[in-house]
Length: 243
Image 1 (cartoon, rainbow, N blue to C red):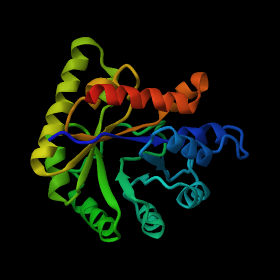
Image 2 (image 1 turned 90 degrees about the vertical axis):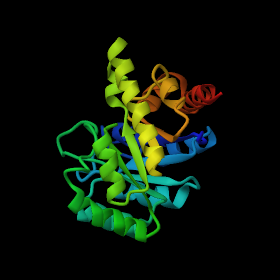
Image 3 (image 1 turned 120 degrees about the vertical axis):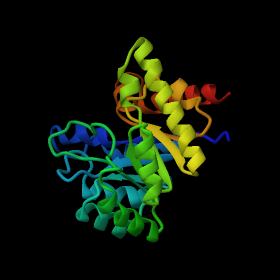
Image 4 (image 1 turned 180 degrees about the horizontal axis):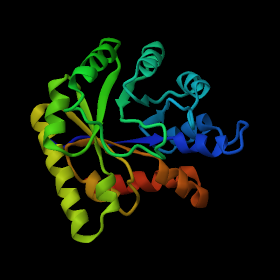
């Protein structure tokens, strides 16, 4: 079944630039408002244990200031679960997290962490928060996500975006197969990580993917053409892929 395709804009790296020298500029909440005006369907923010980009204050302000659904990326830790339950964002995407990593490295090992993840998923769902699990396009990880009750998966597209030539085609085939498996299991399927103007169309063309979450590329491109135009161009490519 062909799904509508939404764009979630990740504003973490606006906060990264702000935090490089302190102060309040550039403001990630202002970026979220510009994203809303430019066609984004949602805002994604990753509140990390180390708070190296998005802060607790940012989260408070985002919840108060934006009308778009907020997708909180988070590790499955007691601290982050408590924050999610207190704020009740529209969605929570559970991701793996290591303090020393520069960005999320690979997908969550749901198959190896079923017992610890199951109660986290259940508590967030009970609070009315849509839960997604950020995983590799791997059959056993998708099966595990379904088994622990997650209604949504987000496929990690980093390997596809990093590969070249025939290797990229092989990685794309994995994403296509994973999206089909998710559909068969009744899971909503999202995708993200590393997507750019060059790589987005083949992923956006997968008819059963309903959401792409993109951040780093859009913020980087905004340096040259502005955030509104970088988002509008991405939306245009997504629409082109679906038509």
